[in-house]
Length: 131
Image 1 (cartoon, helix red, strand yellow):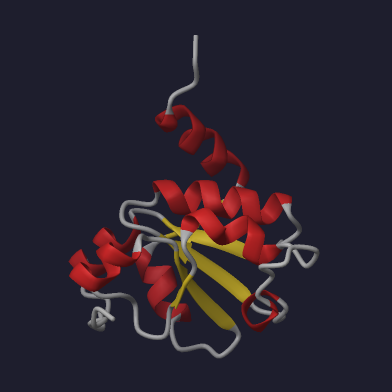
Image 2 (cartoon, rainbow, N blue to C red):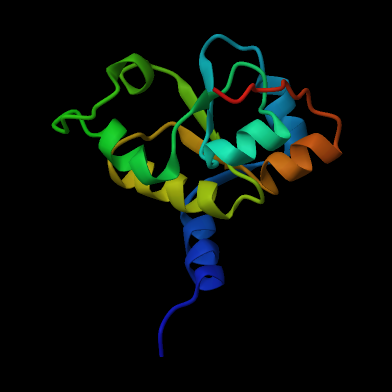
């Protein structure tokens, strides 16, 4: 029988650090912390993003992380920082955090409940204009 997405996410969450919104709020604004938004750009245009977050399309994460890739983004991932990943509900960010750690980005975690929980609990949201 095939493994479903819920099983994949649960397995990832057993291997990675999940932070609460309260913990993420406490780290927001720290210059040594980078928030990574893995959502689709259309979600970001529609819902906004966490102020200061860097948009990394989920489909490009592994390519932007790998220093041997022609798509490597040293401007983001060569920093010595703590990386807090998030998506809408925390599913893509759990899988993305797991992949990032497998690729050597040890100081990565994700927000449980994602952007939805962040916004519900009063986290700041900045609008992003469609380009």
